[in-house]
Amino acid sequence: MTKIPYKIYLKESEMPKEWYNVRADMKKKPAPILNPGTLKPVTVEEISPIFCEELAKQELDDTTPYIEIPKEIRDFYRMYRPSPLVRAYELEKKLQTPAHIYYKFEGNNTSGSHKLNSAIAQAYYAKQQGLKGVTTETGAGQWGTALSMACAYFGLDCKVYMVKVSYEQKPFRREVMRTYGASVTPSPSMETEVGRKINEEFPGTNGSLGCAISEAVEAAVKNEGYRYVLGSVLSQVLLHQSVIGLETKAALDKYGIKADMIIGCAGGGSNLGGLISPFAGEMLRGENNYEIIAVEPASCPSLTRGSYAYDFCDTGKVCPLAKMYTLGSGFMPSPNHAGGLRYHGMSSVVSELYDQGLLTARSVEQTSVFEAATEFAKVEGILPAPESAHAIRVAVDEALKCKETGEEKNIVFGLTGTGYFDMVAYQKFNDGEMSDYIPSDEDIRKSLSKLPKVD
Ligand SMILES: *Cc1c(COP(=O)(O)O)cnc(C)c1O
Image 1 (spheres, protein in one colour):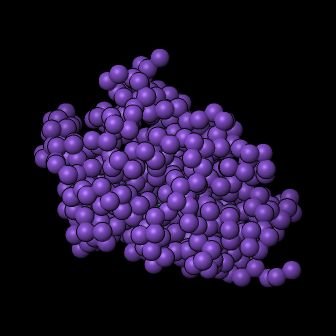
Image 2: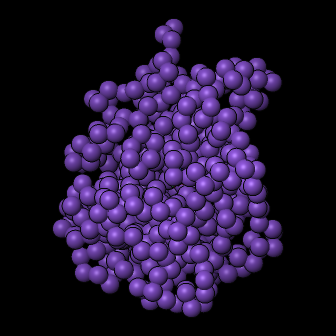
Image 3: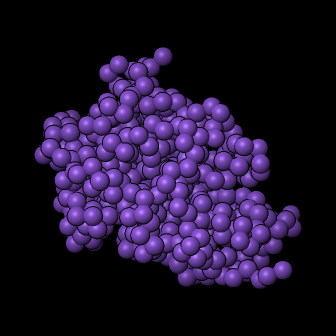
């Protein structure tokens, strides 16, 4: 048997030329997104004032399994992809586990996360349509950074509404975006109607992703030649992120490795959805079986404690309604250092797969996540993003279980990014000042009582 190298790289010629749309293989499709006014499924025409046309088509396409990746996007992908699939030999040694651990590392680009995979696609389609620019929100800043890079490459204007608390706490993220030419506004701002309203209702608010989305959508609709783009949750984003799963599968196949378990962190569900898509596709077609685990923070537990219901995607209630596992669009998660996992809902594709039992979910507490992060950093060298460390936590837990049972499981997890801009969080952890806030049942019940009545 060939020894598995530390890093399994695909050749450029082995990179995917098409994205895979897992919805095409789902017998029961994710519930359609609804017009909040009529409560009828939206059409491409209805959402085209908000989204780029080609992206609106991808959003509503439940039937085409493979969609060609345009050459311009593949040219950009080639600058930082294929990303390595790494055999975590050193972590295995440290844990003394018989399990074989692999991680797909998406942090090898300036934005530091997988978000660039979709940012470059969305910027490309906006440029193709002849638009002037795009608007978006960013929480922790990874998406805004990725989009700024993509817009700079295609010569598009980029307006980012950044959650106020991150704007203040992450000045360097903000400066990276501005260096790539984006304009960055703290949200809620006084520039939009919805921002003024939220500021009036909640004076001194630190902002949230839901608020920033409402502002970005309003800015897109009110500015000629602009459209809104989103870095997670939407089905089009999962489609673009399938490049992660396709590369992972190709790399495993190259060495004849069959994954037993696939683990990913879940905020809005895009990296997890992208990583698992080709594997879930095999399960849906009855060809193979995998154990898939979504990992979320205990402070924002949409899959493990939310309801599967139609909800607003944003606090200002301007976006279409999506059926998803949700904590309610008014849910304000407590301060948690994994900013990218603080969204109230979950991708409708991941939600439906979860509801069908194709994956399970686990919630983990912050301090144990940082313990896993530092343990990983010390042996594997990479300083992980706090979001990614949620997946590390569960991968380590599972590898330790294998140590007890003696099973040689192949565990694959998504290492979505690096944590260089998260040093305030690491500082809190190093100083022993990190807390584990978990919302009470009453908190969640209150928030869920405000779900829109749909049927
Ligand atoms: C945004 C982000 C996530 C979470 O987003 P998903 O859409 O759930 O993938 C995870 N890791 C990193 C590094 C991120 O930037």
